Image 1 (cartoon, rainbow, N blue to C red):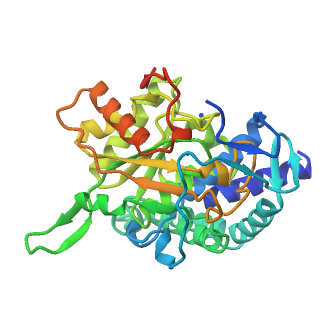
Image 2: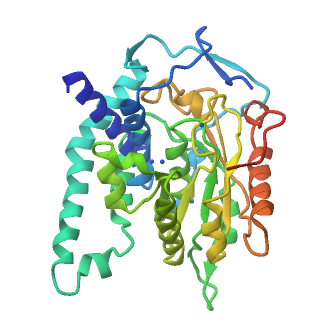
Length: 377
């Protein structure tokens, strides 16, 4: 493998760990109207790089209680009808993905801290867990961290090193809606949040850290494509953190993923899924696959809808890394809706309610195109 290929994989996986997991596209690239599909390796690696943030990262703050506005910085509202011609500046192309100056700086920063902090800590955790499993009592695996929360927090700290400095975090709206999940003991003392399945639309790899920003230090597992396990570095991160790997073409994999997801919810761990199954190439909301919802229905866990806006402006489909800050217009937004109960509803009823809730909170340019079916096979 050539050095450039190695660099691509490493840079992408690093970025991914920093950030985990398809009408006209709402933004334009200085006259470029069509997007190139990324090469299989680089695409998976770049995608995986964000997956790591979600994956081995709990990219969020204070149990999700804080949001972008907590910095005290005023963020201008974005009109749903407003369109943008964004100039990302000069960019180089590696394979079929672009990297501009902003992305190059972010990528280099991330890979530096990935080498110095994230990967060594993840490796040490995996080693400690293996040693603990061979000792009587398995203290680490059964008592200290039975639900693999430590890798999530390691990733979160790594993510903060980049996302705070480069202002990549989104503006988070609707966090007050999560109070409906708050556990209150018999003395009236507030505890943590009940486990839930967090569901969002998907148009960019930045959707992953955007969702992580909402979740914060809570423990969660992404429902990710099984092929990401084969990506160098990222695959290891996915397995160490205990994320749910799903191969939709394999019935056995589907059953294993289903049982794993159900068990995580029973154990009090949140699940995260992008039910469109892949990134939207137009930015508009696509049809949902209902498979993941069955996990929440099985245990009666609520579904939290998240409507993501302008993440694809922060990192367009054909860019390997973020191409601009989330703070510059249009501002990246993660809008949290009210939790939706799964009890007493058929598969189709639940699917339609979640889909409509997410769609209603999206700007016009992200709403589903006319005739888009709600459900997909």
